[in-house]
Length: 490
Image (tube, rainbow, N blue to C red):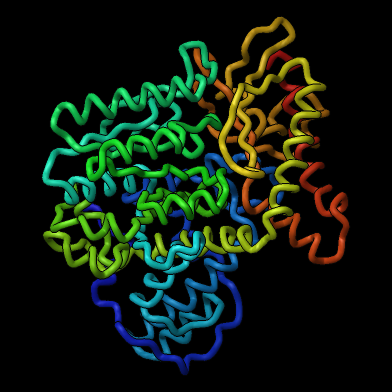
């Protein structure tokens, strides 16, 4: 049976507020909890670690943790674990444990997880929404599938974007493409028409539909349009449940908030744009959907993984069967790290967020225009000042496509090249290759930690050019190494 690393079914329900503030951060245990092997989230064992000394432009896949996120996870670890061990083994043990980890101590587990869910809903000013924590985006999709089935007396059929725009791992679905066979983005009206056809056929079969709207896909596309979804909801009242797949979180905040207010569920990842550790996802469910959900079972693969405190109390009580444990503390710590970045990002004035994203896009475009070896695939997604995700194809001097997997490894390990000019380069981390037609592209992406860093430098009194310069330098070094490798025919 898959269980969280520690089974805290015995965890105390009260706090000890008199514990002293711990003194220092101890990274070893925190790193183990954030990044260590996890049967619930296998991707965590091979995920990125800390961001120091490397260039991370891979936020559509996963990035190294910033000092901001690491500090948030360390503080929460001391606070929660010190309280748990103190109540079980005595104050002296709890104080010593908290002192090793560092940070304030004194919160009970149920209060901590309630607070995490409250903060997730608060990102979109949706306090009435119910948040469910999951160990991966695929797990969250499977949970959504189980809940939509429990919300309808009819069978429910998922309809979603075809891979690779939506990675495999979720429940089987009827699919609609976002690109044609050559890798070119389809016009939105064609995407809408095919999605509507899939919905109509599923409804005609006697099933209800769970329609997944890609707010931003793995290659920077979106679809179907919200106008199309609104028409389908109007034409088929009560038969359509909509999930906004915002795992990339590259649309604007106000649109997601409107989706929740309009009764649509939202899927989030803490490990992509937010810059948290891998192994953190969440579902936000609007009250109208929660009201329809009856008693439900979890699929066998998740029944032994999902912890009780991943769920809000009213949904927790509707699940048939027992949970494997009270809490998955690793999942809570990963969301602490991600929320530190999310909350800092959304605290930035929207116009400034858009300005930083536009500057990033201009710099990337300038470097792409100067390189004969790199070509951005077409992409689009709705959003005012939406953060950037660029799928980029690489060619050698003869115009032949260079294998993306091999190129990605070379970018991450420049010191292994024989050419002395590359030894001085920092490692560059780009997101995993994704198919664009018959070729594979590497993805370069702006992430919340980068935007937050620019905003912090502005708050210190630097002008915009000075504040943005470190990110511009990272882009320059990235494209310089990328171009060298392409020119060498790597």
